[in-house]
Length: 107
Image 1 (tube, rainbow, N blue to C red):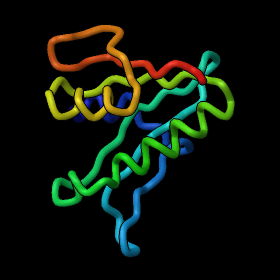
Image 2 (tube, rainbow, N blue to C red; image 1 turned 90 degrees about the horizontal axis):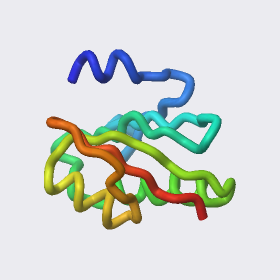
Image 3 (spheres, rainbow, N blue to C red; image 1 turned 135 degrees about the vertical axis):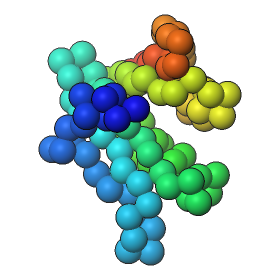
Image 4 (cartoon, helix red, strand yellow; image 1 turned 180 degrees about the vertical axis):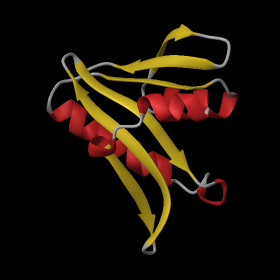
């Protein structure tokens, strides 16, 4: 996990997620030649399941849709994560031992 984070963290394209003026997570969402790449969407465990992640991803989807660009991401292989992304319109494009690749089509 540490290697993955170090290799895909882009400070210029990362934002903290704030709740009541406190940092509860962050995401990295960067433009690519053929769409957007979301490298991270992390929330503190005590903030998961409250709709915060859905709020964040919905805003990023709206941004990408306005530009008619797809969003690609790689996420850990868990049923909860898979259900989250599929609920937001992402489709599986590839699977690895510990992660799954997703895309949400443009428009």
